[in-house]
Length: 450
Image (cartoon, rainbow, N blue to C red; front, top):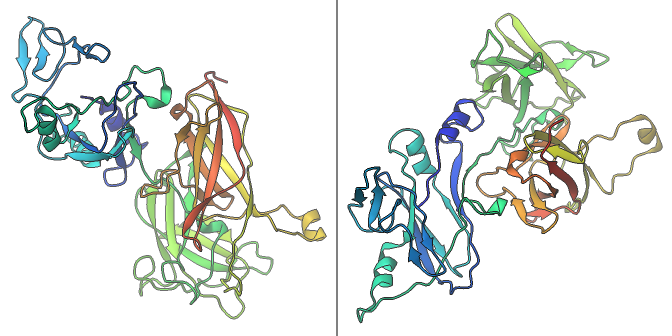
């Protein structure tokens, strides 16, 4: 049996650290503890929500198999709790009392696997007050419980020993966890916009731009807009491309962001505190502007004017398989254990060959990777601390803006006093697979303040 406090999750959700229901998944994670005992094979563990309060006790001695809870404080197969007066309260059903809803199963083939179960529905029910949080009960499936108790001859039948690490383990990354995962990436196309093309689908022709309203260093909602809507119109540039000029450009009608009644502007929506975004598509003219300007406004109030360089999409006569040089441009040697750090990724193709003029007069621009993910492992033993989030959650997929790809990492997820390393993987649409890049970037996490 195991119970996690949900008050911290509620607090983080209220403060905006964890997204609202429907935008985050919760996982119960338990880690296999090696043992000299025989480990069972091909069995199913069921995770069920406990329906009554229970008391934590000393537990079971797995060396001599002595049950220290019997007659003492704590819960076991029969006993639920022992109150201050010494009275023992038992479960209504031997083995514990559970809700019939929100049950989860995991098959263990070798028996040595870790447990990782998506418990999102139950966690949201706890957070929403549908059920009281009495924790999880983890046991063999009902059919295997019966088989484990008695075989056909009536004799006891053993499923041997399966152990998970508890919260008191000395291994930092083996502690039980209730892990929240969500897709927090921002895909700001300001540095990677394209004119509409018949080579792309309607959704692929959409470009997304963001407005970030910083006031005295902090993101703040625009007072007259709040969480409401803005309008964004596109303009071509003046002769020297220093400011918007001429009339509003006609955007492609998509009936979501640009409607028949508003082809001269796209509707921008609220993303989070101080951040707004809009999506649009625009068709290139015979002589397309090399620079465009986006003007954000509401009524007679103009709030922001930005610019970007749209590109023209072209087909190729060869199958592209680019290789990249990558670097973390702002990587430090060490980080505080309580720090939330942002990392900026510089990317360029390895076969990039600048002219002398370009090399002498320009800053090399980073290339934006649409789908990039990171992982973190500990250097001393290669233990993976954070895995690639390339499944359904995309919790380690990088964001991008005009400066390139970037991501944030909360250092409290890592044990201090160790050196770690980043690795990156880019999605290859031709191979339909993620390809890990060669470079490794090392850093330490230290338990000090500066």
